Amino acid sequence: MKNVLFICTGNTCRSPMAEFILKDVLKKNNITGVSVSSAGLAVRGDDTINKNALQTLKNHGINAEGFVSRQVTEGMIDNSDVVLCMTQNHKRFLPAMSKVVTLGEVVGANDVADPFGYDLSIYDLCYKQLRSAIEKFAELYIFNKDNQ
Image 1 (tube, rainbow, N blue to C red):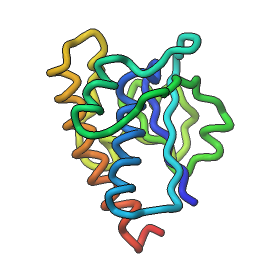
Image 2: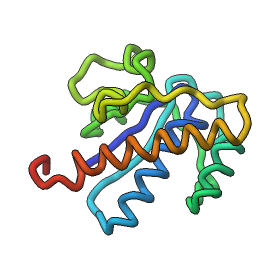
Image 3: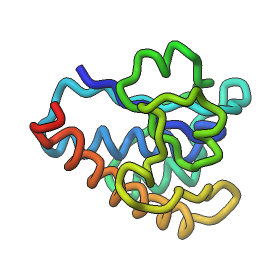
Image 4: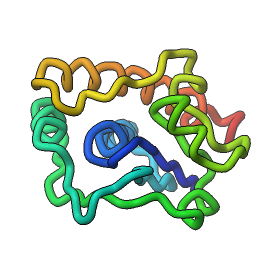
C-alpha cells in the first residue's frame, strides 16, 4: 500500500482538492493499493472543505461532501510514502525528509497558489493546475512499474 499525503495551510481548499483529484484519477484508472489523504499546517477547529472548492470539484464530477479538515501530525508524515506540499513555504514547516516535497518539484511545475477568498473562476484555475500536476505525478510514481 502506498500512502500519499497532501499538505496546504488550512486543509480547506488546495490539499482536499488534490486528495479528491488523485482519488478520482486512481478510480478512473482502476488503481488500488494507494491511500490518499490530506491535512493542513494551521487547521481551525472542525473546518470543512471550502464551499468554492467543493463546488469546483462537483463541477468536475467529483463528490467531496462531508470532508472535514485535519491538522497534520508527525504520525501522518511518518506513515506516508510521499508528502506533497502545495508550496515551498509549506515544505519549510515540515521535517526535512526526502519524502517531503512540493507537488511542483515532483512534476516540474510551479507552487499551487491559494485560491482562498476568490471566486469560482480562480478555484477552477487551481483545479486545472492540480489536475495536470496530479495526473503527471500518478503517471510517474503510481502507474510507472519501475517505481513500484
